[in-house]
Length: 86
Image (cartoon, rainbow, N blue to C red; front, side, top):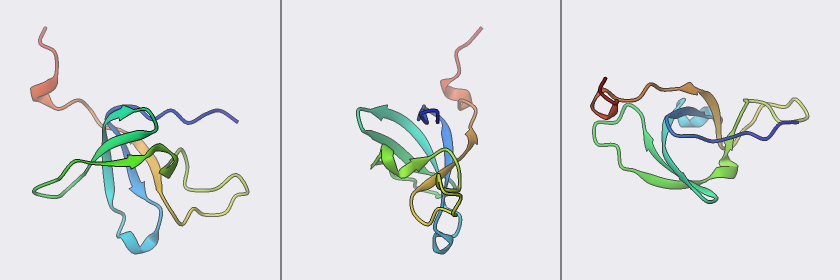
């Protein structure tokens, strides 16, 4: 099984159905934590979460649906104001 790598601008969705499919974006990764922001909120506050709550898929290694943490959706493009100029 390959190790899941968490990187900047990845987008994750909450696994718990009661969280209303909350989505987060990775801002940065430091050690065993990631700084994240919630997508879709007017005033998204950055916060830190443990990397072990971020998963590559919506299912566990036994095939059961995950009920905790966040599952990877994909990569969000770099915001225009942060893109390098050519």
